[in-house]
Image (cartoon, rainbow, N blue to C red):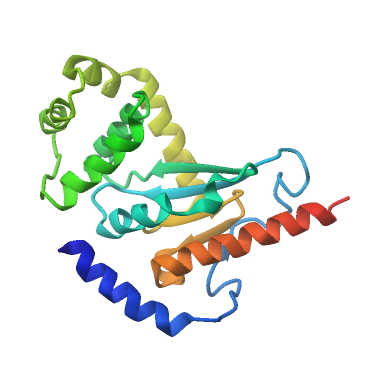
Length: 213
């Protein structure tokens, strides 16, 4: 039901923004003025970071759009999901994300956790509720607990939190491209536009790299 309501709003809103151009300061924000390391040919990948939280209904819907976004799988794209930590419950969910990453069926766990949170109204506000989820996914609960509470996961959460503070993320979902461009939900207005603006910026970065000497 949640998806149906949000998708109806999205379809209506997207008609208002057809055939438009994207403007700095309106549709996306510059974080840095200098050319990105990609443009300067210091690396070969355009990094696209999605800042999200499992409890965010818009992130839940947007995740489906991302799963169908073909451009993010191209050879010169590095796509990264990055959980945001604004408070203690979000910290627990960030630890869950990096625990998922240690399992071969990460994508399935990621999608199923979103589904359980929003469609089954499971809030996952304690370690035990998290362990119940792992058990429902036929994951060794003790192994999951060990990973969840590990120093390795703590370090990954800390690193992600540092990066997101650098990006000055105020809401989710948000997209950051090459540590230089930021697209917030309030700027994009719709899920489709967030993808379209991202593709526009990726095109700019590719063009600027081709011209860079």
